[in-house]
Length: 235
Image 1 (cartoon, one colour):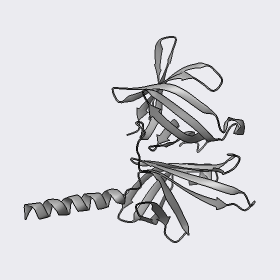
Image 2: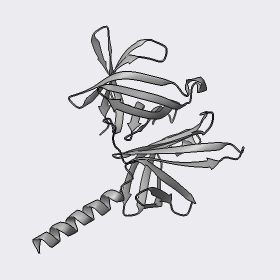
Image 3: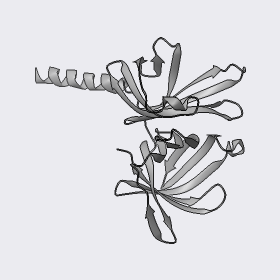
Image 4: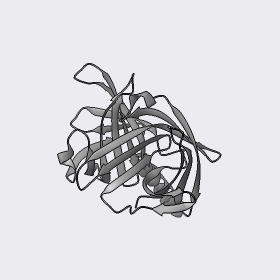
């Protein structure tokens, strides 16, 4: 009997894991201008982002995101940024989802996404907030509870950073693409960048370390300037 209960518990656990949206998803569609657009959604623990960009040129189209929770098949999102409709910031939306092992459907909207990854293998899976910089050997901290935020959200293979203000509803910029973490090296392959399309296709390598739960990110910016950033896990 105990073995049966254990088997049922394991089966239930596997089933629940299969229903988790954690990770990265994508779909491709044609917009009103006839251009092919790629939409990539990243779900980290409690936070999510959506980035839409032209599939061929990588030109940025739009982005939105915030917090999420799942109750059965009902997903609720609290909007923190929205480039298409800033007035949605601060509002809550609820919709029905159907999650299978490799697909996620938004029920009633004819929107199906295909899984890219399940949160692995990257070592930095999660939502992070810029919490400090080191300049001339001196650490300068930043209050992560303020409305002005720079968030970086990562699945196992995809990332997106977003700069925005939840109070003014202002959106300052975003970029993202694919990443890897190997032997202390964090490498970004840029697939979209809202401020400069010419950055698309670039590959940037940095050093990274996890110290007391914080992500220490060092190297050189795309302009060649030395940088030392500190990111903290978003609670």
